[in-house]
Each structure stands twice: as C-alpha cells, then as structure tokens.
Image (cartoon, rainbow over all chains, first blue to last red; front, side):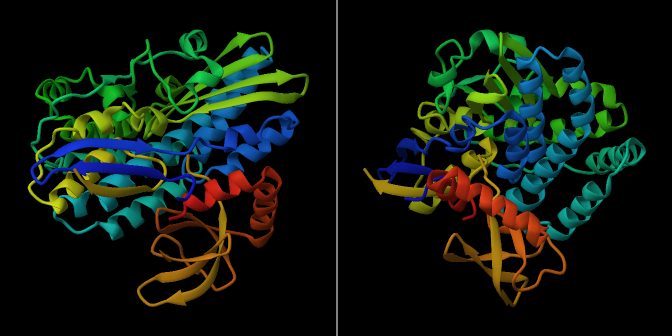
Amino acid sequence: MEQGVLQLTLTWDGRRIVAAAVASTRPAAARALRGLPLERALEVVPRLFGICRFAQEAAARLSVCAARAERSAVAATTLAAALAVALEAIGEHLWRLLLDWPPLCGQAARQSEFLRWRKQLLAVDDAAAAAALGGRLDAWLDAETTPLSEQRQAVATVLLLPRLSAAEWAAQLDAEAIAGLPTVAGQPAETGALARHAAKPELAALVASGQRTQARLAARYADLRWLAQALAAPAQLSAWLDAAAVADGCGLARVETARGTLLHRVELDGDRVARYLIVAPTEWNFHPQGAFVRELGGSPARTRAEALLAARRVALSLDPCVPCELAVNDA
Amino acid sequence: MCLALPCRIVELRPGEQALIDVAGVGKEISLALVEDVAVGDYVIVHVGYALTRLDPQEAEKTLALFAELGQAALQEAAGTVA
C-alpha cells in the first residue's frame, strides 16, 4: 500500500454494491512543518503542493498573518492572492470537465481544448488579461451543456458543508481531532462546488431528487461561470479567502478551491511553527462515513464493471486530490 | 493532499509518453501538458500527467526539502504521482 493514495473498496454481491469503504493515510505534510521558522514554513508550503499550490500558499500566509494579528497584512494578502487562487480553480475544473469526465460518459477526452485553456490560464499576468480570459470563458460556457453522468439516485448521503467564515471555523475546529476526519456538528459533510452553489434552483432540484453526482457535475459549470464573471470584477474574488485569529499566536485561514474549502490553522511559538493543521477538501468528501461511502452502499450493479464505473463516477464527482485505487471484493 | 515531488525524466516514449523516476521507482506518464521536455529534466506530475517542468536548481531545492522533511513526506509525495 502506498501512502498518499485513497484506497476505495467496494463489496459487491452480484446484484448490488452492498458496502463501500475508504482508507487513506493521514497527510504527513502539515506535521513536517512543526518547529520550522515561520519564514521557512512559508517558503516550504508552496513547494510541497502540486496542484493547489496557490491556494495552499495563500492559506499559509493568511493563517500566519492572522496569528500575528496583522490585520492589514491579511487584507493585502487576500487581495494579492485572490486572482491566482481563482485561475488555479478554473484550471482544475477544466481538467475534470475536459479530461476526466468525458471518458466516464462514453466520450473522448477533449485534450486539445484543455491545452488551449491551460496555455491561456498560464499566460494571464495582470487584471486586464484576467478579465479578458473571464469573458472568453463565459462565452465558452454558453455553448456547453452539462453531460449526463447517470440518473441513479443516491439512497443516503451527507449534508452539504455550510459556508462558514474563518472566524466561525476558528470557533469550530478542534485542532487534532479534526485532522483527517473532519465533521461539522458531529456529522460528516460534503464540500466542493455543489456546497458553494447549492442555493441555485436547478442544483437544489437535482439534490432534492437524489441525483448528487449529476448535481456535482452541474455545480462545476456553475462554479466556472461564477469564476469567469468574477475575473472581470475581482473584488468578488475576496469572498474566496479569509482569515481570523483563533487566540493569541494562533491563526486560521479559509481558502476556497475547486475541490472545496481548504483550512490552515497555525499555532506559533515565537517565530517558529508550534503546530500546523491542514484540513483539505478530500478529508471531508472521502471521510470513512462520508458521501462516497454512503452514496455507493446499496447501489445496484449487475456486473463488476458496472460497480466499478458507478464508483469511478461518484469518486470523480467528489474529486479526490490524490489518486484513488479502486477494488471490488465479493460479498 | 497532492504533494509536488519533482520526478526526473528517464526515457521519452512514443505517443507523448515518458518514463520517470519517482523516488527510485519507474512510472510511465503523459507529456501532453508540457512542451520541450528532455531526458534529465524534472517535472511535477499529477495523476499520470507531467504538469510543469522545473528548472534543475528548483528541483534540487525541492528534493532537498522532501529529504529534510523525512521519509513519511517523501512516501506520501511518491504516492500522489501514480
């Protein structure tokens, strides 16, 4: 078993998936920051993370500013980081929609289209270029229709994570207990684009009818639309990041990412990191009693291949930030 | 969380594929998202795709960092390359 990989196991009885289970290793990265001088920790964080590095870097800087009660630095960091965080989220959504979803819906991956967008995203170097890209993305979205992932209805699932501010998270978050197994009010919850846009009537209707996978797919388009329009009005983007002091020398930052809410919490010991906690979206969505496990348990599947495809779709809709290994065991 | 372990390109293969070295283990990945990659270059890889090419100095710094953070971080990072 490799570390840093989600092990997803289905139990299948020939007619249905009778149970699903998740095993993952607790991320070592945050632990590795303990004891580092602050400046070093801030240099290390963006180097550690591959795909969400701008969000991770922003969360690290914001949590440290909040821990030092530097309010004006929180505001300046939010402003400086928001655009990079938004562009990163757009790139992640396009990756999923153009490269990963089509093969699970019986279509070819749209690699050349993805490459064109990726080049444009990487070329953005100022607010005017960002606004122009937002306009092109907005127009492109007009011509896109959400593919039909499946019409299966989930029998049971979890709450959608409410949108909480950093100050609210600061009051909720139990530093050690929550790492790896986060809950709100004692319940596992789902984070991501659907949780962000659940109030939209068309998404609420899909959720109400139990079509969570389809709702998540549609929510990605809604999130992209919001991001495309926010690129032209960057003040809106600051809604995606904030930070609050938890106590003297302890700060918490919340940064939204394509996959959901990312939280960093730092406790300082002078100019060193005493404790560092990262709660990543994958820890909500692949909680051992979370959405993946609940939604697949009881799903009909006539063949092993059907069981695997159903699990791949649910897993992709919940969007793990590490590779998954899927296995099917006979009941 | 996906950790950004620099991986060295060992061999270029047909169809925009390459063999990389992930902490001593060989893996085949796609080069479709990066341009002008040569044997010996370091790349950041995510779920089977090379995402970015690193300049060798940057890659060395990051590798040194993972070494400093210890075996657990290195194993975790290697797992996310798959």
